[in-house]
Image (cartoon, rainbow, N blue to C red; front, side, top):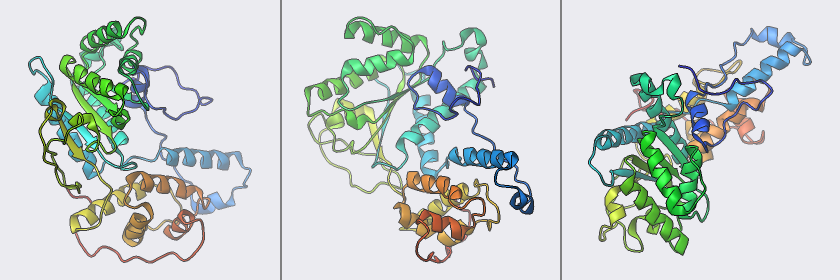
Length: 377
């Protein structure tokens, strides 16, 4: 699989920016994180002078590896992958009209945006494997199965269309109606199957622009032959689904807390299934095992000297939950930064000390009493 992107250079910043164009998205789809460096024996490393170029390169390689620490394919990601895959299959040859779509609602830092991008990336990778002819060199960029749009505050209908137009390299000159027509034509010509809108809570329907933007999302759902996935915060409270009236029923998964609301269904609520993604909780054996599994997958990806295997998982799983409040983003940030805090000798004790700023006594939490696999559906 060859990435359609320019040659990389070590002089360029190696990280990825939020995709704004199909080229940005291709970079994300083909992105290969830095490999885990092969560590020399500990005694050899300790014998190196601090200014030794080989030692500095080794530290730099390890830091780059940890900065791109592997993202955990959590049970929630697997659940929504199944939901989105099912929607794509149901909508693929559907008759004209709005397709079934999905809204992923939840508080900040639970991983909604990352989840949507991870699943979108996997969808495109599967299509590239199953239908390589659609991505032939002569058609580079012509087939764009996934479009990812991150909305901005107080977004207007024209801004939504302009964002899609820029993503697909479509001319943005002319009136809103002209741009809308170009966008719909481009989505069809590019074979777009999955249209992801991130941060849908920026559709503030208390303002005229917000109501118009909400109507524009419905317009796109009606006329674009693709599955729409939206993410946002407090979407149940937003008029996005209710248009000023109570929302329709909510389909739930194992991490939903709030009860469904009764009320008349609206056009938008009938088209979009709203599901919640919440913080990890430890209220049951299944939930404990899910959290422990996420901690374990991230811990096993760390590149450390003198680190007792699974020690963070066995001894500090509960502390890490308390420290991050069950936030996958918080856990990922802590474990990504902690190896940098104590040079290379980062046993679990020192990693927890570093997470806490090096002060106080590290709590000794008991290991889970349950048995079985670390991740369960």
